[in-house]
Amino acid sequence: MSPSALILIATPLTFLLFTLALSGCATLGPTSEQQSARTAWDRCPKSANLALTSIDPNGLIRYRAMSGPAGARELAECLKVTGVSSALTVAAAP
Image 1 (tube, rainbow, N blue to C red):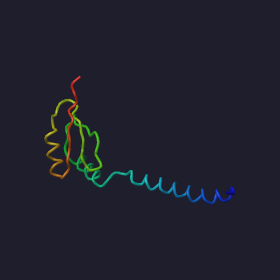
Image 2 (image 1 turned 90 degrees about the vertical axis):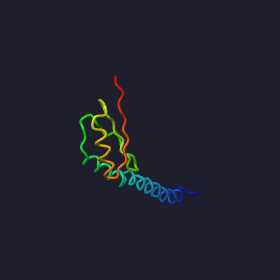
Image 3 (image 1 turned 180 degrees about the vertical axis):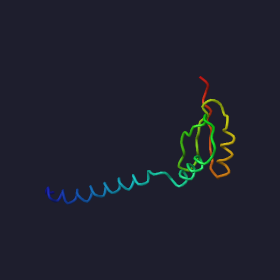
Image 4 (image 1 turned 30 degrees about the vertical axis):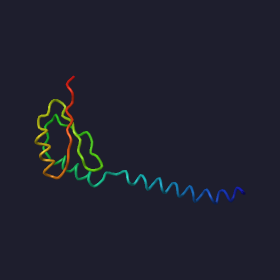
């Protein structure tokens, strides 16, 4: 196969691979469930010892109580009213 024939094959293949990689990056944004969960998190009252850990793609909020579970029940109830699931992790005492 001649070098010019290889270039004619490689150019579309490179473009195709680049396009696929670029379209894959477009899906890395937050899901609609994550956006709704973040809005609920921002609107619900929280005590200072509660910290957001992560929001799963399905909208499950994971948060941590740093110095005891104070305020965790109120936050869980507020999130539940908005239709958001949550999971609490209590940090271990040092």
